[in-house]
Amino acid sequence: MVIAVDGPAAAGKGTLSRRLSGYYGLAYLDTGTLYRGVGWLMLSQGLDPRNAEDAAATARDFTLEKVADADIRTGDVGKAASVVAVQPAVRAALLDYQRNFACEGRPGARGAILDGRDIGTVVCPDATVKLFVTASDEARAERRWRELQVGDPGISLNQVLDDIRRRDARDSSRAEAPLRPAPGAHLLDTTSLSIDAAFAAACRVIDRALEDRRA
Image (cartoon, rainbow, N blue to C red; front, side, top):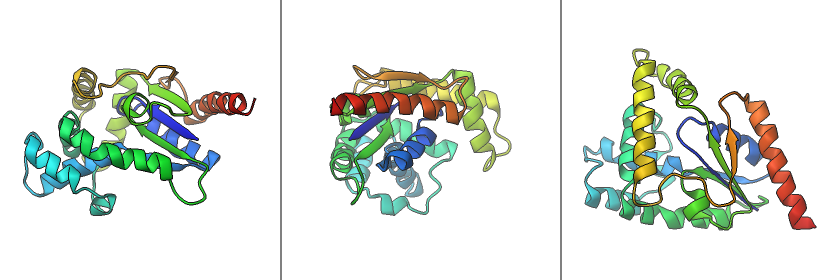
């Protein structure tokens, strides 16, 4: 079983995916970690994320172990991740990693769940279940603002909202694997949902899919 979870930043797809992975016994991969990791590595080496040649080389040599202890959840790393993520050579370098994870997962797992922005459209178009998790710009900005305040108490909510809108525009308009719901994806709007309510809604979708497979 492979579950693809896509959606914009701070929609809640990561929290939801981690909970689903535990409930259904699935290996979990936050694919945004790969792009954030590439962005962090470039910044830590003084490289410009806009340099396509350096970005591609960093992506080809990337492993999660290289960023195991890195703080990849800062605003600057998020911006760098969004820049490298629009580059075709970077996406190609990380595509095999994601597909291999979907196929192999981990020993003993019933399958895999991957969250990102192009899982259902590009990485795993034949996924058992596809979810597109979204929320209003304002709700997503407040969630991300609360996260970022821990490391940057001076950051403003308006700044985070502007950053999220710019990132949405880049992700949705890029030529390579733009952010959009996959065909057959189930839309889950978490604007007014608690994590428990979002989890219950996702479980209903997944359980129906599993029942259909057994029928």
